[in-house]
Length: 179
Image (cartoon, rainbow, N blue to C red; front, side, top):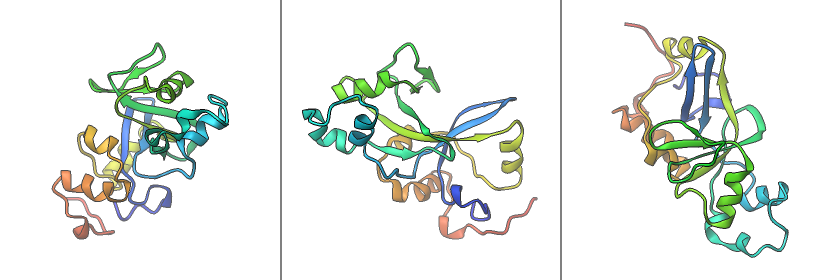
């Protein structure tokens, strides 16, 4: 919401992937990183400098997003259910999360999931913190939409997420009240 004063989350779309009495974890899915997927593969030494697949347009365009302010050096891949390894965790009926190098190697080899995004870092909330922020009108919530999660048009994702809820972005106010 506009009144959220933390610039880290200004106009952010966050996919919540875990929520329990112990807290919540999610990923900002509309902020790009300043590093490309081929650069990540090289930094992790998963490929050599002269590896031919790195020239592939699909790898060059593979989304690398800023998942949130917590542990920004840690990577997670949010992906479709057509790929799973022993470290993959189901997030929903259609989505998995993998936080190991296996999935990056598979993507580089062309055997990875059909839909995927690499997220560096995550957003985390202590027990009860996210609930308090929602009650304070800091966040709007809605069911997830896989098309929106994997859509690469990041600059319009915030507005489109609001529109899925029937909210006109231009009508949002930084003042909130409770009925």
